Length: 337
Ligand code: AHM
Ligand code: MG
Image (cartoon, rainbow, N blue to C red; front, side, top):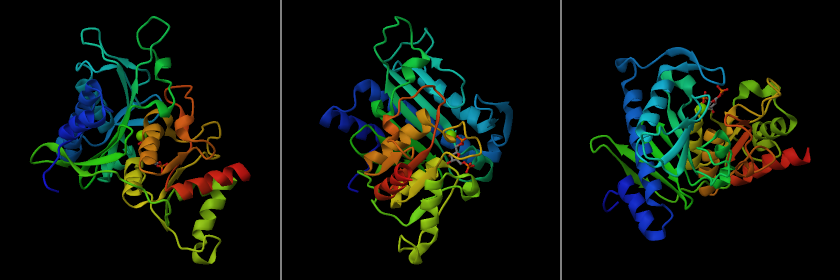
């Protein structure tokens, strides 16, 4: 690389070259990146910062919150609420939407996030991350401030999506709809530096990611797909497959962006009334857009995730994403079986 391009400079250059990033959005993304930098610092301190362990509270989905879940949520809210770019926020860790208080200027965007994804990995020093999605505030006809219903837009309406992974390196991956770029945190400089542009996911792969312990609960199409992978060279696929499951969606998706693969968190019979485990608005939608922007595909087994019309903020969804040909194969099994 001739010279190091910071996230700030990258966004300014994008804005100049094709106008895909309005100023308010650019500033909003910089604030989100700054918040991720502070979360990264808290994660790095671990036991030294007293941030590990459970907070002994539950979120709206009845999951026990970790101290870092709550810290990351607060960092994102505090960083974003006063800047004038946002009208409201929504988070995995908050029951309902968070309006920007009246004392601050109101912006035209809405931010959704999973402040710290992969909670089961926090206390065991395995990669975790922040996932975020940006929507435009709709021109609402109800004549009131932002309401939860304003957030219920299909993933195809996102104007920016990204994640920050806190792993051996802290890396921010971003799309504003013209490809996927990756920035690595340079701790000495304190800024995110562009390290890869136009990331492309290979269409074929020999690597799958699924929690195999749920095998007995799967539906027929998923069982068929994984059985065929496991049959290896001697089976119908005619090649051996490898398996990885990190149990942090950010880390599994990041691996897929870097070298291909398929990720599945399907519907299963454990809780049949739930569409899946992962959340549509702040996990599946942003990750699906990133994956599509990198040439991959993302479905719920039947339909493109970005086309789904959300009916509630914390809606769950089945997720199949990654290398295009594999995702199409699994989706084909669902529609033909
Ligand atoms: P979380 O948002 O509570 O951390 O849950 C989401 C995580 C994903 O990151 C990961 O893919 C999945 O849950 C792992 O689930 P499981 O423990 O069932 O394998
Ligand atoms: Mg999560």
